[in-house]
Image (cartoon, rainbow, N blue to C red; front, side, top):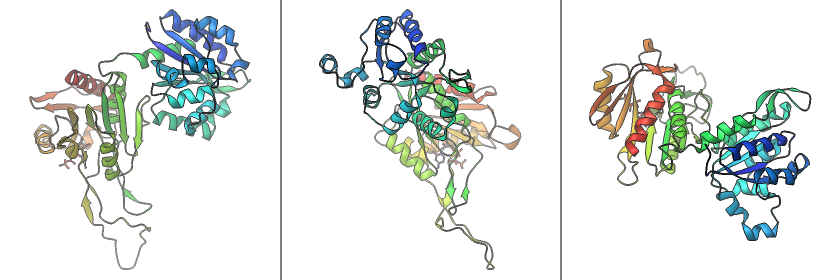
Length: 397
Ligand code: CTP
């Protein structure tokens, strides 16, 4: 239900704008208050009168409408809502958002807001698949903006493919998910994930087999419980989740910098498989084969991010969770690791090659805290993530 929730609905200029009329109706049936904003292009597809009649609210159309500014300035308008929904989100609006333009009411509201944003893109299939739009989509997702659709099917322009706006009820479901008052609402949680790449020279690096699957699943599960998640990821195989702020890094040193810059936080989950060592003096030129024999690489130790954060004198998150990838004596080693690093919990897993866990879809974990070890049955990484998120919610409760 959406009773008492306030949605600011921006209707962009596309044929799918007619579906937004139904969306307004569905939202109001569920008790939401809808404040509509119609772009100039949107007015070509639906009339301000039908929008305001269905919303039961005045339509905002122009940045320089002084009457509106006196009643409610655009800054305030962008912030009173619980969620900004852009439906249809056109290719042009997405490009404006990516660039941070503020040259009309819709783009200004989107730039001025600190409220979560949900986009329902709708456009011709070629426009959707164009590298520019896909680039913008990646940037917007990285900014923590959630996206629903588009769906695949016949399009008004006569083509077929992805680009149709999600159906009103799908948008309603996405809105309900975004507005769910989870137990982690108001909490800020950092999650590190993926491998790090430590350069040898401009073309070679040292890495590990982490896919980023477990850290990504934890970030998704935390966001689903309402947390504001800062997701700091090395070059992972899996895409970052929706609705989190993404910070991409390559090396352990960059990851440490990003983590320190993202503090303070209520909790930190350190799921990244950080390289323990880096090449002491990575070459800025490609190493060449020589007659004088093989190149000798000298290593130096990387900063331990988990340990650094766990042992902070000021600004330490209330809950610090580490992971331990072990191949032998899992519980013994992980228990010792928890003490050595100073974190609150260690989620230990056996990454022996025969388990198929590193890079696989399942995990077999034991959670170690001050009270001892809790062994969980083998299950999917998403399920492990949900259990970890629920345990974090309980601890921060
Ligand atoms: N970790 C970290 N920074 C590092 C190394 C590890 O933050 N430079 C974190 C990982 O994200 C994980 C935990 O420390 O949460 C344990 O990682 P693991 O690789 O199992 O431990 P190591 O510190 O490498 O210990 P060892 O090599 O002795 O197993």
